[in-house]
Image (cartoon, rainbow, N blue to C red; front, side, top):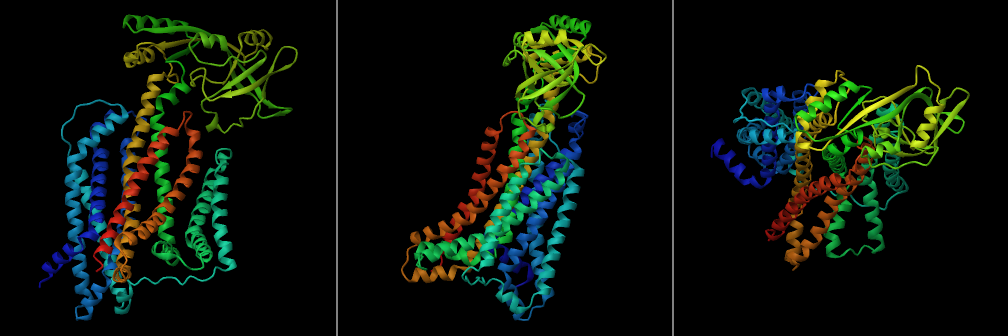
Amino acid sequence: MNTQKLVIRSMVKNIKMYYLYFFAMIFSISLYFIFSTLQNDHMVITMADASVSFSSAFQVAGLLLIFITIVFTMYATNIFIRRRSQEIGLYQLIGLSKAWVTRVLILEHTILGLGALLIGLMVGALFSRLFLLLFMNLIGIEAAFGLIFSGQAFIQTIVVFACLIAVSSLQIMMTIYRSTLLQLFQATHQHDNIVKRPSIISAILGLTGFILIGSGYYVSTFIVEYADSLLFLMLIVLASTILGTYLVFHTTISWILYVYRKKRNGNLGLYNSLSIAPLMHRIKGHANSLTIITVLSAMTITMISLSYSLYYSIEEDVRLAMPFDFAVENMQEEAARIADRLEEEQIEFDHLQLNAIRFVGAWVEGDLHVNDRRTFMLFSAEQMAQAGLDIEIPPEGEGIYHSSRANIEGMELSFPKYVQYASPNEEHRLTISNFKLENVMNYRFWGYQILVSEKTFQSIRESIQEDEHTQLLTFNVFHLLDTEKSEIASDIFLTNVDNDFISDFYTEYEDARQNFGLLIFIAGLLGLVFILSTGSILYFKQMTEAEQEKTHYRTLRQLGFEVKDMMKGIIRKQLFVYLIPLGLSLIHAAFALNVGSVLIAASMLTPIIMSTVVYVLIYLMFMVATIRYYRSIVINSL
């Protein structure tokens, strides 16, 4: 038999082992080609807002994708070589050189890689237009375009993944040349750890795992409050959480399982013998991979949920920051021109004038000045209610602080506080009794926004000291009733206002949609790669274990145990293997999202639930595939 036939027969024989790896490689290549196409697409670059660098974002996404694919490929290649180690040893045992064996495996791997590259490029080219349509829809840009094929993206993808094939080929060569015959024949033998009675040290380490994770969670609650030390606190949280997760898998779980076995006096029965017993012996050996899977899963859930939350709540978040479609300050002529132009275009709108006071004061808590010389804006609640805002009217002599960005600013939101301001005779204090995570005036206007009753507003207006820091303001605000013409109205507003700093609701909404549309597009696709990689790694490891335990299943079948009874224990084992990392990753993600929630004023619950459900369903598909593979092993064990 020549080398070519041997390679083909080997690939056909190992198709069950390669198919998921092959699919993951095709998906990664297609996705990289699509990112490269979008990165180099002239229309995407020219049509995007100048403040959003789409090309750079797709370039960074491509680099992240390459990194993920390299890690996944090297890990999968290592598993494949271990599973075929006896075959490699037999080749050498019959007199074939290591160079010949290396050449055969590299040829097989290259054919597999080139096949994935060819199919991936074809799939990427076919679906580039679909993904461009999806991307343009997410960012809210409408355009007509034909089929897309980027020669630069084609060459770039070939070069990158040819280098990846070369790296994995080098890995194969180094593994074979470094391995002895004895190591090759023993590589697939599972060396179970002897479960001894846990020592005091293991008990301490087991408890330390939970303490470290809890400490990481606790420190994460201070990240927003101490934003100046953001990097340092994030490093502490990551190190504590990852090390704690490792200890949980390495020590804590095996210790808990030992206690469970001891309570049953060692009588585990068939189901527990097929589930708990293997975990007791092997969980320490899987600690590294399970930790990686847990951390990557938590990162993926956090990344997708946060990006989807940002995109999902765009309109609500922008509306909380900009309650009026248009607003101008002390611009009576400009407001009149805007109203005239809106009427000319037959755009229905409401137009009102609001009074406000801008002054310099200080936040005070008790007798302690929180800070000095801050700018405040005072508004009448009754006037805001007339303008159509759904607001709470504070009691006389009190005010409510309104800000859609208070969480990001890291301000201490404990009330009551006081605002101290100057009057001609003495210092006065206004009691701030409450806080609302929304603005009562568009955020572009400078000053902390305080809402008081009309009577309190007039009282302060009469008593406040008039100087260069005190201004009586008149705001002209507009509500568009015909939202279908928002773009035309926005152009009218921006044309008639000669101030680059002032913006309107529609412009802010479209800018946010472009930014967060780009984010959810990249995060969603990279999230799929993450879950394919983590799920595949766990699946490959369980495939290997299934092959190693085949003789055990044959023995049980010969003793008369039925397949359905054996599968109950195996299913229980897979529930442990898949759900423990998933559960820990969900808890990790929950605390990470709690920190990220300061970026969003609107509720994140709905997008988080939707993102998590999708992730969990895809993740559990790997568990179902693993159980099906185990079932085929058990059935064919005789």
